[in-house]
Amino acid sequence: MRLTTSRKPSPRTRRIARTLANHLGVSYTTRGKSGLDGDAIWIVVVEDHGNPSGLSRRGGGGEEVLRFSVSFEGETKRGRTERPVVVGKEDEARKVAEFFGIEYAPGSGADKEVRVGGQKIELFDGGDLVLRLNTSGRIFGAE
Image 1 (tube, rainbow, N blue to C red):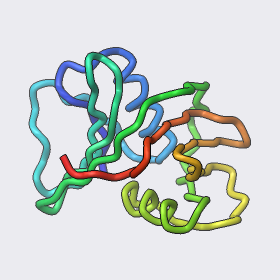
Image 2 (cartoon, one colour; image 1 turned 90 degrees about the vertical axis):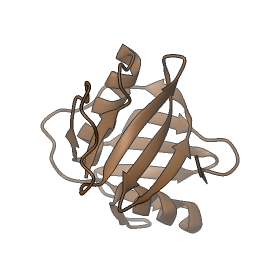
Image 3 (cartoon, rainbow, N blue to C red; image 1 turned 45 degrees about the horizontal axis):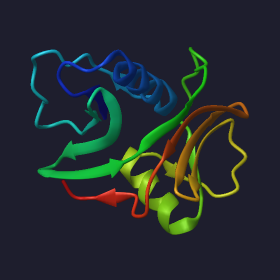
């Protein structure tokens, strides 16, 4: 799995994409004019008027979209390679874990977590909030 941005992203969108890639333990690729490799699974940070507004998971002939607004950006801890686990309300958390291709482990107490619930997705590293994505109503939708 790889993470990238739409073409000509804003600096804020690039920063969010790098933060997500670092936290999820996946590689970040600067897209430029290149297309997406059809064999790989890509998560693309899309934007609306220069602001990151969603993630599009593309691969295997399909696409799934997660819409959000960013409400908090913290500091990322570099050099930490372990993958996070998803915790939270079962239905939503399982969908988010599947979207990101990471493990769903309720009540795990892991150092790196993706917490899902209350119309938000929060990324924690060592107890510190790294990023908060607010979702409205349905987390996933088609584009």
